[in-house]
Length: 69
Image: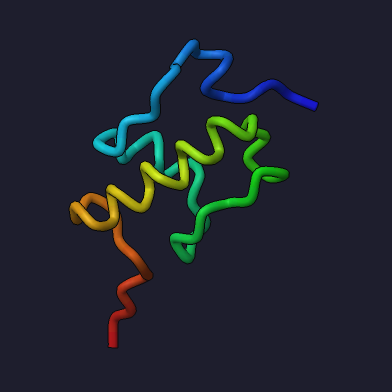
C-alpha cells in the first residue's frame, strides 16, 4: 500500500484554492474518489472532501459535467 500523497509532501492543510491538486482526486464525472482509490490517510481524505466542497461553493470546481447539447 502506498503512502498518502499529502503526507509524502508534508502538507498538513489542504487548501481549497489549489484546484489543480483537487482535480487529481475527482473522477471524470466530478465525483470525489473513495479513500481506497486515492490512497489517502483518513485525516487527509476528510480534509480533501471539505476542500472540494468549499471549492465547488466558491465556483472554482464544477458540481457536475456541463453537457453540450
